[in-house]
Image (cartoon, rainbow, N blue to C red; front, side, top):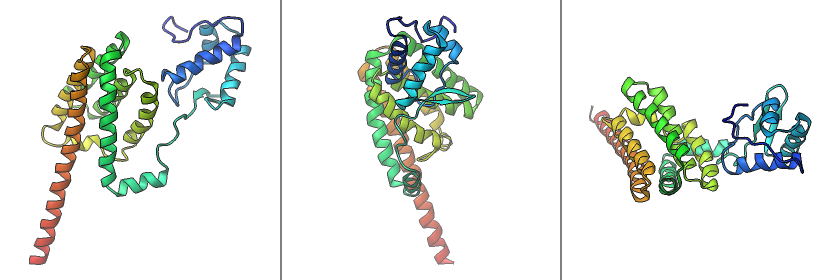
Length: 257
């Protein structure tokens, strides 16, 4: 393992227990997130300074506790810990009923406003560096018209904002919420960017949020996050209203002919 490994050598008074404690702590803190593959046994044992038999013993305990899944031939992965926010049937129901979308936005707005305020107070130097790097990817994608990279950077930035809050409950709960976003259950951000000027406004809003967090201004970060989510909601409300007007107009025309 390289010197940048997040894993540390463990003491020898209870080697397996110390390894278990370290990995559990990294899961609780949101450093190791669900679905994340752990380093190979060789790399992990080397980083922790323990034998591979002791490491296997620790991994077996973690698997028994339901914290990791060991897939033979593939490696060890952090288990799904928060579960699915909704069942497939409920997801399909939500997708068919648009009113649920605004409940989703309302929930996200309040949680992200809270997360950004905490991030402005608690973000570390590595947190800020990560936010700036992702933001630069977003800016470059905008300049080059790379929608796919921009979409991924957008997703990554929101995750990084929540991570910078240092609140482990927020980190784990929002990971489940963002999974719905990744699946495109409620809305497609590609569509939002097709609205006149929306793409540039979204970029500017993300820049403002990152600058507020990195400057350590909780009120500015909170206001920027709220303005961003309010803009998203209002954009969709306006678009939905326009579609409804067009539908009514089309029906009136059909009846008039």
